[in-house]
Length: 150
Length: 489
Image (tube, rainbow over all chains, first blue to last red; front, top):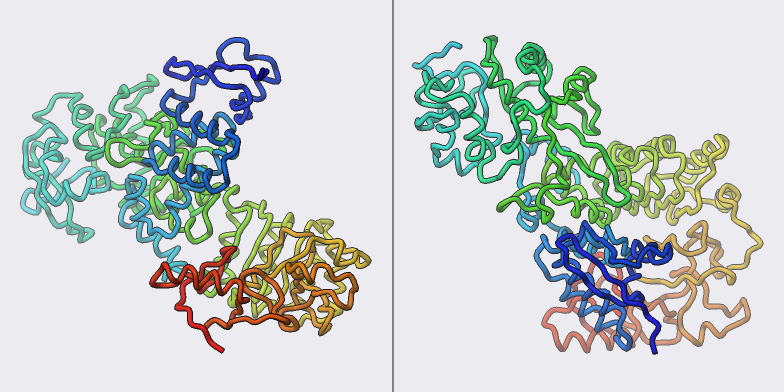
């Protein structure tokens, strides 16, 4: 019989998730709590909502599965990250809060890939960022960095 | 306040279209007219002072809200101040900290006059005349400037304090503030907007400020992309310029190589605020010994330096810099990439080895093997080599020496037979790095060489694609990643 313990994680909106300890310790924060023996009750995660937690657990489970090839994992990651940037933000903040370096790395790389090679305007469009420069400020910064783009 | 109807010259603070969407201005939305609780149309007028065209209210006599009740100002913030963007400021009380707002007006009037003289007030988005302004208006001044303020909460290992940005004229590109300004701004009069407690998805309505999560990803960007991100919005500009963690490792290669000068290099490395750890400038023809000297002086803790193919750098210059560092007790350099350095002699090489603490008795075979892949000018600094070049066993010249990944070559034990040499002595496949001495190969347009195994991979993929992207087994950072592939020979 497996001796894996089940941990209970409670998200900010009150939902509880039961998860194998072996999977949950992908989060360094949870791992520390386990080692400090603070997990008798549900582990509160006030900075993560249930929608994001569901996705994070989906990632953890897939990356804990046995017999999954590297290519399959890559395909999974690719599909996992094909989401709106708002979802990526939530995932990234959750992964950072949970201290899962691998997940942070993967999501940051995806965000960076969405920025690479784009002009400032394209980056604004991609991430729905408002241009709050005055025309003068914008022109000044364009001139300062013109050396890199002409 | 005075006004001149004929010339439509509006006295008093004038707000330019800084906080209005362009659509609003073009469409002459009456939202601005309602800004002061009036129902008047917007009309463009020509400011005789600056020659700029600005928005003013037609019915000037009512401009100061003679028809509006006190407190209406705040009611119209939503629709007017930041068009199409909800502003948390709208929800805040007028005087949350029980400050005596009226006495602050005098301070601000004087402050604004100074700005007008020193910095150009149009940078702040408004101008003043020498007239007494309605105290209520100034009480809400925080809203104008608030739009430019951000607080960044601690995110992971990046933590930084808000940079106050109220116009380029007020501080240099690295966020140094005028002392008087700081005294005023430190007052709790200012309303702070906490970016981390905004909508966590980073979106307010359609457009908004970038989420803190975006800042986490900046570390994954190259130099050129960082400079693009700097131009996106103020928040990102401030972070890119002021966060030293983003500038600890700087890598400059194509397409910036030929464009970067000493001044730009020093300016960029200064962003590390003395914490520059690794600098890689590849094929940068405009960097000189003087520029590098400046970088060394300001970043004595530099651990890795790679300057391959920089024609204006000299072995003497770099040696001089390293000796100065060592005499100052800071010989922290762990890796030196100097392939192609002008004036390099064997004596220079020996001195470099001494400065870096290289153990000459350590046999090459004890180190991790180095295989040729892609652009030979960007040799990885992650292996055990403290200096990228060494004396080639075959030609005795100072060059980058590669090992051979092919199994037959790795079995060779005798030093004389070892497949180790520079790429001039032993030609290698650009993809897998194996030697081409005893096998057939093809030459690409770029004069790079591909062994037959790698060729077959290319041909297999060419059948599936109309245009070949050099489909290398190990994707290499090569300039020519797209080419039409033809067999020759």
